Amino acid sequence: MEREITLLHRVCDAYRAILGNKLTGFYVHGSIAFGCFTWETGDIDFLCVADAPLTQAEKEALIRTLLELTPDAPPKGLEMSVVLAEHCARFTHPTPFELHFSNAHKARAEADLTAYCREMNGIDPDLAAHFTVLHHVGFPLYGPPVAQVFAPVPRACYVDSILADVACAEADIHQNPVYFTLNLCRVLAFLTDGAILSKAQGGQWGLRHLPQAFHPLLQDALAAYRSGGSLDAPAQLAAFSAMMHQLIAQRKE
Image (cartoon, rainbow, N blue to C red):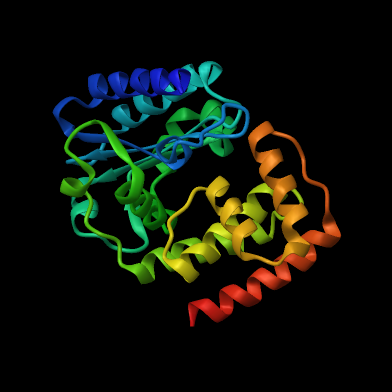
């Protein structure tokens, strides 16, 4: 895990130089925090907490840093949000954010950095899930411990966040079947057992708890997740999706 941690430290050092005392903390979540990151299939997830709103110049400097470091990042890139300390200490859902970046927005940021940084703010229901993962396995590269900065996320908000992610992934099922399959497993694992899992851990949970008829699909999804390979099983995916949505609907009531 040396490459990704080294890259995170480079980003953190740059952000500390840009924001100075305005930066409350720099927090790692996602697959790196879970300990199951793979360079071929994972992105590098982190959150920055600021104690005051960012200026336009600060936003541009933060995004420019990520664009400059993209050649050294894994294929799925870097994903980050900047949130204000007040919204971490007094959690609201969906959570406001000051700035966001991921590979999905890279072309837009490169085309017009000024406009991108001016417009990329709002509210994000995904932050409830990110904050929950932070409490479970996340850690700071800079700043106070997670529990001193982030208030607990109510269960209902976390459930709303992960179910919204399932709905978004459904539209992308055939473009990203590995994510779709493993994500459904970890969502059902939480609704069943209260377990907060990575995608890889979700797949392993599925192998222990779901019907054997779907074990080949789950094993293929896990293998593809680890290697960056593909998963092509449209008939199985449709049946798996139908079963999982039924189980999720039962558990969330």
